[in-house]
Length: 65
Image 1 (cartoon, rainbow, N blue to C red):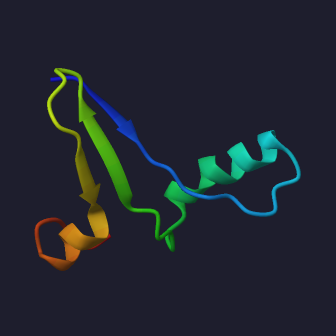
Image 2 (cartoon, rainbow, N blue to C red; image 1 turned 60 degrees about the vertical axis):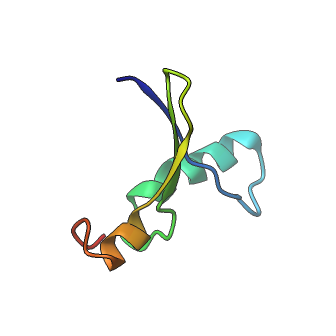
Image 3 (tube, rainbow, N blue to C red; image 1 turned 135 degrees about the vertical axis):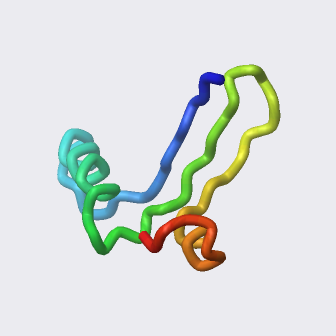
């Protein structure tokens, strides 16, 4: 199945849209990131799902982030 995955967060104090995008690009790969929630839309039109990796790790469903 195909999915659309979206991750959104606020970027503060960026001087330009390009600098904001660069900050956003770096955020998910930082080891100390707290940006671990994604919204996933199945392309078949079924209900979107919110995936929270921190929550899943705390529940023991995935390896610790």
